[in-house]
Image (cartoon, rainbow, N blue to C red):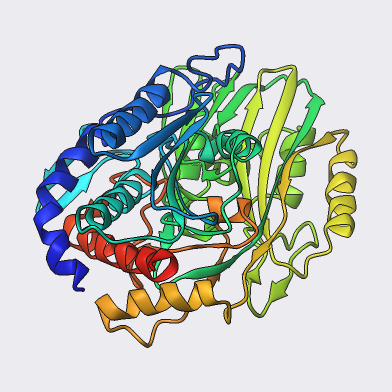
Length: 450
């Protein structure tokens, strides 16, 4: 069966649905577990309701799991194939050419926060399920499109789902790259905290998520340093400005899994401040965390032949003139000695009277390249791309696949595509997404068909 020919008949439907979902600003503002109706906020709940209502309308079995997650189901059998997508998105930082939740369409592309991470791919998986259903294909497994609501901020949605529902026996997350990702680095987040006073630096603010390279840093100063700051910007060819007593420098957003693709605004500001004030946490940042996305300054850098290098993202700084919180995100390969690395991280903080606190640690995820799950999905990709050259891979990003015992990340970005996740002017390519629909349908039938 040629799923690509069939997918062409669903293109208008895909565009209509994905635009509706992209227009909902599903950024987590605050997690409120006491709010049983919308623990992640009204917009995320609205998005979940939209998808589950759509599933009911199209004749699927659907289930809402405590407004933390839900699934849309097709097929029969004891085993479950999970297709794991998420509806939440990171904040729409940076400069956008059009409003980030307008779902602006131009030249075969749809621009919006979440277009590629992960609403566009999740809707592609939904259309794949609908095509299979409409074609009357018999499945010997239950296939569940699982809709998470908190992937970007702690994965509490999928964790609640797996507490209440059967863990899928195998699965894939349409939330990464083709041809296929069989391994994901460990993801480790921590903070440094301490009490600090400074006559010059009244406050310092940058970043709000562990998994985003911050693109702006704002320092409030008690003294006029306009001459020094403007010279700093000119000498380093940087973008910045002064608004009253606020000194602002601009960098570039990127996903924390690939910090080298961004320009960290905290690192830029520290370069300026370290020559203006003798501040303990500024000195600590300068010595151990700035201008270093490999962890060399902390002496935790390491390379793995499959999982590549450890990477480090200086994610946020919040300082109010009295206390400081510094957030760091590390992606580490399977040969990293976590305990030894943690000792070095703690020691670096203590040197400057800063306390360490771990936020989360998700260990590396690995499925053998020889597993039948990997082979079936890879063959599905090759069928609709004729790409036998691109290799399956390991990444630093974290997807829902790491929540299952046997799951991989599978598309939809093509080899060589620009990395758009967590960046301004994120967009999906409609033609490529319809090709992904065909690949997903093929993969699901290979894994769950009779």
